[in-house]
Structure formats: C-alpha cells, structure tokens
Image 1: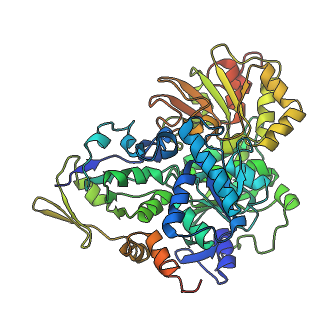
Image 2: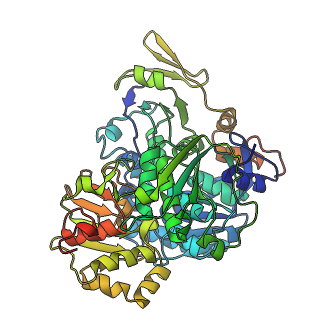
Image 3: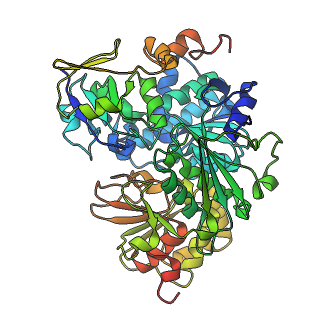
Length: 167
Length: 414
C-alpha cells in the first residue's frame, strides 16, 4: 500500500533535485537517486512506486528544471497533493503525467507515513475508513492527460487541447 | 474596461481580444534552450517525432556549465553543437554569455514579442516589455515543434516605482523590496506590470532587466516594465504596447525609490529580505558578482568604483563573472577589469558561474557567500548548510573589502 511522504511549505526545485545532480551532470541513469538529497536523504532510497507526495504552499518554486519532477516520476511518483503550486512546476507535472491535486484541507489532515489509497479517476483518497475528495485539475489538462501526456496529445492531433484544428 | 500590458501583447498575438483567465494558443518569436536541459529537449522532440518548425526561432545557449566541468557535460555540449548544425538552429557557445543577456544583445528578444525560455529567469525580457516566460523541457520542445504555446492569460499585479533612487541604492534593492512586499507566491500565475514614474523613468535598460529578472521570485509568469526613458531611444515602441489607463489589476503596490535603503535577501528564501544594516558584520568567505540579475557593465562599474584603490579582505574570494562576452570586452576596454584585478578579484568565463552550485565557486559546509544573483535556496551553491546572501553589486563589493557584510558607505575610511 502506498504511503504518504509529507513535506512543508515552499519546497523548491533545489530541494527536489539539487542543480549539481542534474542528469547532464551525473548521467540519465542516476539523477533520480538524488531526489531530496539535501532535505530528506531517506527519501530516494526508501520511496516505493505509487507513494504519494504531500506538500504545503508554493510547492516547486524556483527553477524551470523539468528533471526535478522527472526524478520523482522516475522513482514512480504519479500524484502530488499540495496546498498550492508554483507555476512552472505545475506545468511540468502535467507535462510529465504526474497528477497535481490542490487540496489544502487534505494536506493538513495527512501525516507523514500514513498508509493511503488513491483513486485517480474518481479523485478519492482513502486512509483506513476515512475518505477525502480531491478536486481534479482543469479540463484542458485532463484532456491532455487522457492521452498519457501533452506530448502524446500533440503527436496524435497536431494541436493543443482546446485549439481549433489546422493551427 | 481596458487591458493590461500582458493582455495587450497576448491579444495582439492571438488576433482577438483576450482577457485574464482565458486560455490562448499563440505563436512565439523565439524559443530559448539552455545547455542543462538540451538533452531533455532533444528527447522530447524525438518523442514527438518532430524537428524545429522554424529553426531560426530556436536558440541554444551554452551557459549553465560553461566551459564543461566534467565528461558528462562535455558530451552533452558536443551533442548541442552537432544538433544545432544539423537543424540550422543558432548555438551560442562557451563564453558568449548568459542566455537572457545574449538574447537581449542579439535582439532576439524585442519589445512586444513573446519569448519562451527553458530557464525560469526568462521573465528578464520583460525589462524591455517583451513577454518572456520560463517553461520546462516539454513545453519548450512543443513550442519548437509547433511554433506555438498555450498560455492562460494572466491576471496582473501593478507595481509602481516612483521617484529617483537615493544615492547608494540600486535597482537590485528595488527588485528585492518588490519581492519582499509581494512575497514568494504573491504573483503566482500572474504578470507583474511595472510602472515607473516621478523620476523612475530614468532607470536604464540594464536596471529594468534586473527588476524583471526578480519577478519570477514572486512567482510571476512574466514581469513587464512599461516602456519609457532609455527604452524609447533603444527600440521602436509601437503605440499599442502600453497598458490602458483603466486596465484591471488584481493587486496594486507602490514602492518609493527615494525612500528605499540597501536591501539583502537572507537564507534560505529570496523573499526573506532585510535592510543590509540588520545583518551588517556577518563574516563572508566568498563574494560573487555576476549572473543574469547583475552581471552587466553598469554592475561592474559600480563594483570597480568601490574597489578602486582598495583590496579584497584577506581570506575572502572575490569572483567576478561578466554576463556576456560583450560585457567582458567593454569592461576590458574601459579599464574596469584592471581595477577589479588590482583589488584582488578573479575573473570567470561569461556564463552562469557558481549560481546553481555546479562549478566555478561551489561553497563548502558552513561557508557564507554574498552574491548578486537571484536565489539563496538551501544548498543551491554547494553544501546544504552554506549560506547565500543576495545583494546589489555595491554591497557585494563593500563586503569583499570588509570581509563582512556591509555597505560602501560604512567601510572604514569611506
């Protein structure tokens, strides 16, 4: 069963993946093993695919480095629940097919180490007998995510979601 | 109801009137890729089975680790050169400078245009009223493949800077004050529209780039300075490139430049801004002058004016890295470099330098650095507990001479 890894407010891209561990510095095969290397060294070695990341406000502020969330995806992350997101990080999550839920009350209710179950389709999170409702991201993004990612969407349709064809 | 500057630029490009909250797909003028994400960018294009739709609108800048620090980086940069040749895209190689400075110098970023960069500080182009915004590798690859991008038309925060900067106070102090007032997420998803009045119009292009550079530290999508002063001499500004007087703003803030004092951002968040006086006396190990925030000629002039006839304190390393080859050349020609070197500063290759802790000045555990850059997150420049203080070139230079954080006015014998 997936567990919750809970972080505080303002985790930035240097926390998520320090610049010196960028794939072009340490290699494509290794960079993800340095996720949260400074802030929480126990994270990368113990993270199990499907575990949920829970964070506070302004999550992912800082650099545009998509390899920060990519490191998390490489470890098996499929969803983040946060109070709020920094703009570029939010786009990067969607583009990588990581579901960015925004739910301050759920963040407050969850504790580090909680064992949970997440139903993406329904937007429902369960902890034992408790259930939490998660508001899904905007339609534009869901349309892209239905194809797996916005890259797949663009390759298939030759346009962006919501854009009239032939653009 | 009138339009903000961001709404003006996106409406013009969309060919219809668009307002905050709407989604638009617009053509972009320039897609900028930096060396550190180029590998991801190439992979995304392969995944799309696409090549750049308009090769002349794609530029790659080798600046984040220039020259290469290890074999992995050297391989990545070799691939960039080969790729650029293959597809006819511009590559600005080692030594040409920092992406944002280079795009302005090369006039690839222009007023009223839209530039997407694979670097969060792409808001810098807003200093010349160019809609500049940072995005990740996937968005950048899509923009290169399609020539377009999708954007949510942003709400706008209006920041009015009024008056003339007091002596000893710089645009960097004004920018840090703006981030303090707005906070790190105060303008998330928004445009920051900067109005200069009552003397503030005198701010130069370089100073405006500094202001726009820091807007992303308040979370902004773009940071646009309304054209005035020097900008009207350097560029042809179309009549439409001004916000309407009755535009709608989400928030309005005023900063009085005449009343401002030197500012410093204290670890480990950029919006943690104090008066320099509050941290005066803090011991310093390294001083770094450079970056897309403050590595331009006027910044080096400020530093040289303070270092002239003085020496960097024993035990302090003073690194100066000009933002571009043009800045370096100009500083060599006018004698600025000699002044810096005689004071004991050392020079690096134009580029990002140690800003993100990869090379050329990485910090050891417990060390303290005063930097003219834009981020002081934990561990950014090296060891996790090293401390980065963000300040103006003047405060950086004075701190190098003193060996502790201070202003030039407080230096012994000043």
